[in-house]
Length: 389
Image 1 (tube, rainbow, N blue to C red):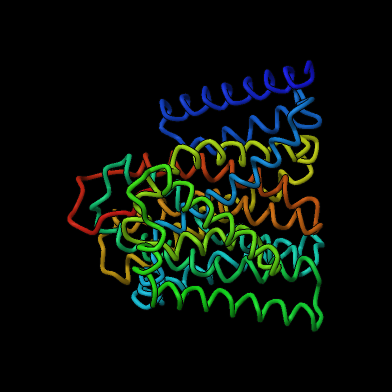
Image 2 (cartoon, rainbow, N blue to C red):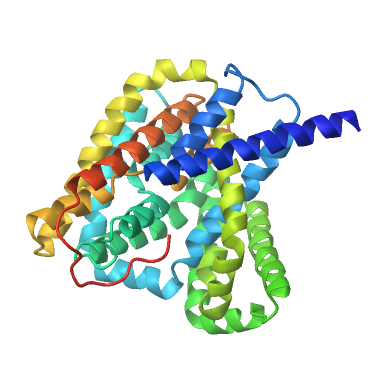
């Protein structure tokens, strides 16, 4: 009983600490994700005050946090919207991929890593943070900015690409290159394609099946659906994170809206624990050896995203300010980059990838937020709404 009391006291102190950081982030108008990562670094092995009794609970909470985070991200887009975004802006998506995936792969190879961890690093440098970008668009009053249409399309394409990329990475990380891996990757791609097809055909039917006017029944049904699909994906070696993302994409209509309202507080709690645990799992002593490569990658990652936004906005014939805003808004990296690093670590890939990813995400989530506020000019122009973040 004494051990239980000590664990509850420590857990309570952690949650209160995260709440204080969330308040500071809100007041400072920056993303809370890097603050949670820094808190985890401070309380992990080699930190200022290592955790004693609650690490196993935090680890389980982090797994739930990743599932809820990706499930809620999936809820923002239907299968029709994802595929529609792919059809509407393929050129911009190709520019984004060409400018932001190769730097990570090349950096991983130059660091002496194998091809699979290098591919993981490529994913980390490629994908922008949908959550942080949505927060910035909302806070800066750019929800109707002319460049927001372009940003939304790019985020849609990135999310679809990551939905395909994650199961491939998980399969390669677990088995290496062999016929079994090829079979697993093929099965993963077939599963992803089948679920997207199912989402297109049965989008309304699934929502009607799961929807309930009882908030209690709805939250239990939706949460159970997300966890079941995440578990099934894990059993199929696609990864629970991908299953959760696809579960969110499959839902639409009243069920999706109800899930966003009811699960948002739960998502925020466990997402905070997820980022905290990622920081917790990294020894601060492991950061100095990768600090140089992380800073170089961060500077390069900021420049390539600015170039992506500038080139794509130029193609859309937007003015110079809109081009710069589009590029700067794409700078932040966050939840997907950390999720990719988490998959790489769980697969036993290059151990340096976790501290490098944490440093990279902290640098770009904070600098991207500051840069977006710095370049903000003019009043909002007429344009489509940004999906809720």
